[in-house]
Image 1 (cartoon, one colour):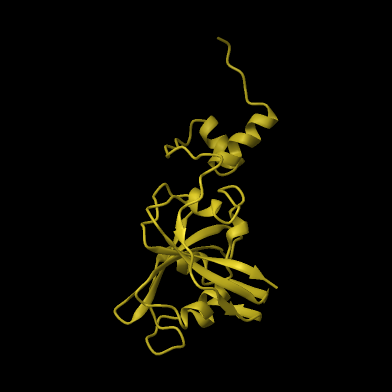
Image 2: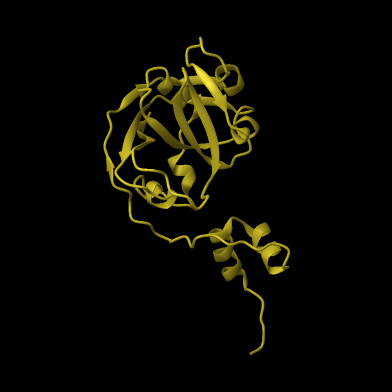
Length: 199
């Protein structure tokens, strides 16, 4: 059977699945081998217990590295940041963040990024729809239940979507940024932070 190259439509479809045309070109050139769990184009929405909405204010300008600092006596006690959060999110400055209601829905069972995103009408390709502003994450953590684990999707300083893994231990919050998707599932009992509405 004769080999043939991908046409433009096939290349775009493959790029959407594996994370961009640069990745596809490296795979086709034989310089990269990617082995992941297959992603479904449409995932069933994850089962969740609905949380109570928290109303959050509009914020004209939010400088992440000024607000998120490792300290135990600030408005939001912070214990640690993961390396990816420091590199990708601390340089972020958000402008004109609208007022919104944020809700933390509790996962009923271990769930993939795809199934979590499906609950808000998004998927891996359209994950920016599920983004939460870091300004609102900061406001939410001021009064958040410290016995809960949280996760959400946010856009970093470079325009890429990452998942945030947020937990409270030893007197402060720990925040880690994770690539989306990373192939692992989020454990049951995590609370998925997402908007009910924005103004």
